[in-house]
Amino acid sequence: MKKKENLKVVVAMSGGVDSSVTAALLQRAGFDVTGVFMKFWTAPSSGKGGWNRCCSIEATERARKTAQQLGIPFYVLNFADEFKKRIVDYFLEEYKQGRTPNPCVVCNKEIKFGLLLEKALGLEADFIATGHYGKIQCATQCKLTKAKDKTKDQSYFLWQLNQKQLKKVLLPVGGYTKKEVRALASEFNLPAAETKESQEVCFIETTTADFLKKYLKQKSGDIVTPDGKVVGKHQGLWFYTIGQRKGIGLSSGPFYVISKDMKKNVLTVSKDKKDLEKKELVAKNINWISGKEPKMPYKVMAKIRYNSPLASAVIKEKLSNGRLRIVFTKPQKAVTPGQSVVFYKGQELLGGGIIC
Image (cartoon, rainbow, N blue to C red; front, side):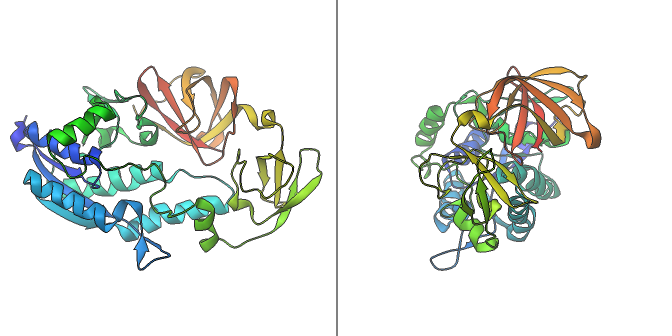
């Protein structure tokens, strides 16, 4: 096996504190580190030029200054066209079909651990590294587990990765808390030490609704209650998501969006939160990180969105087209088509799927 000083790692540097510390830690550990900044598609902005939270001039310069301070090579990779095609177009199409996508999950699979990994291997790198909060342990096979800092854990967003990818990925900050990472940034005297973080979709400047209105036409239809009573008009089903309470435009609320009928162009709302609850769901596009499907029924802990708590569930059976039926011990609120349902056993991320 190569010595660490002969192991080349390409670090995805965003200009943020996590990726900056990732580069510094790997350099300190003796790796041959190269930094890259990925330039994504920028949405037309209210100001001059385009806009993307991840690709601002300030972020690029912070990443460049960090690389200069560490004395490592630094390159900017233009992934704008591929990002638009694989992430933004997917995002818009999912909303158009009435679903609520998670672009970060797809970006990790297609861009960060897809396109970037291809480029890095083409440059004869041994690994790529990112500032994601998660842990990878590889022996005969690789396991992806939760980060030390459970409040910052990002394993949920990595469920689409496979064994081939995981063998080539390093996640150094997964073994630290966010507080410890910030302390390391100060210790290394990095430009990003006090940089604020954001969990918003990178290519949306204001709100999702504002972004969608630029690309999807309004199509008015009825808003009804569960008993069929018409209580208002919506402007297009793609502008609403399951569980939404604000921005529906109805008085005498609060109302919650509980379903969307794309064929009839009808939005159903309710004042009763219990109407949002479902005890089971069907998921498609399943990925098992181990590459092996478990025998069913199979007990897991599951998440139906990043911020939701883990819930006890049983993967009951495999349906047609590789879909799975998942039944929860307790009803879950706002089960949303297009979002990811992700499976865990203890600290280990097993895989997941897209909610139908």
